[in-house]
Image 1 (cartoon, rainbow, N blue to C red):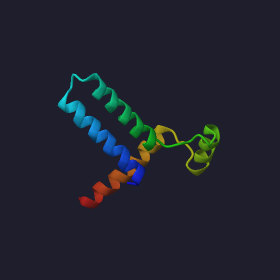
Image 2: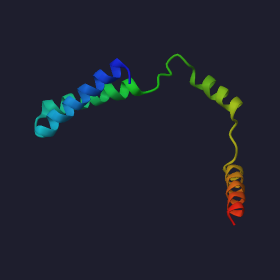
Image 3: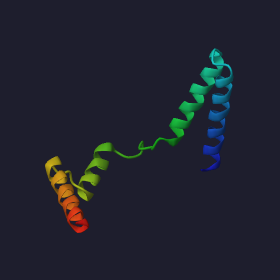
Image 4: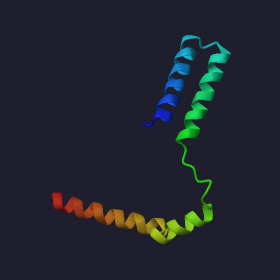
Length: 87
């Protein structure tokens, strides 16, 4: 955890404690909601500089999508081999 994350986590913890001790305090709840929002924004992946379509194209080149039935069949084959080894 970097320094910025630690600072935000501390704000969340302090706001949560304040709201826990006074659940009817609207300002305490507002501070908790703001702190959690800040934490979520900090921890969320940032893809602003990347075109979403381009990213999906790159992912498709690395691991193209397969029909669900093929994936299930492969998994079933692996599980059956493992089960035979145990017998």
